[in-house]
Length: 213
Image 1 (cartoon, helix red, strand yellow):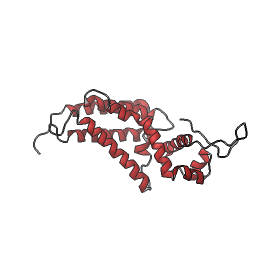
Image 2 (cartoon, one colour; image 1 turned 90 degrees about the horizontal axis):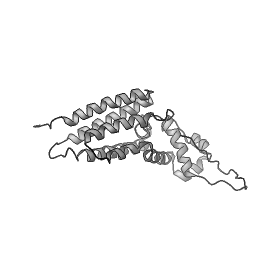
Image 3 (cartoon, rainbow, N blue to C red; image 1 turned 180 degrees about the horizontal axis):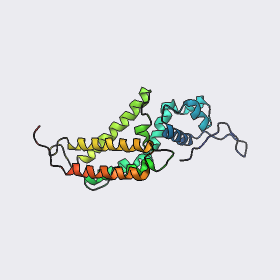
């Protein structure tokens, strides 16, 4: 991912000022946030990297959190797109879950400069309550989407609670893959861990429905 710099008030070849490019600014911010996390990147650094003064950054995005939210939306449309794309595929839930793990291992380790999931790890241990609430809401939405897909195979009336338990298996595994990628686990080891998790997920799907309780 190549960061782009927009020079505020710079001159073009014809002597006209170059317009501020919000999309390029979001691209630059995404690279910084993904590499180091939300708290580690300050407004002054963001402004320098984008090539504007802080007031211009605030005017364009409202706040640092506003810029982060735009960066997350961009991340989800690209690196994070494998989740909704995989959930929309046909086939048994057992295979859907295994595909999620394999694709996560690939996505989270594809760019050694930007490892893991920005939503899961970008605000880990952050002291900013607002941005933490934002990413928490995204994770909750993702879990709800996974549950809805899994209920197609495991409806509540015949398999009460199973879709939710399997969704938690997925959420925990994806978080672990993301953290391991950021900790430097090699791609081949991450892929192997995803394959083992996939085998466990298939086994969990094949378990007989629980009775009683």
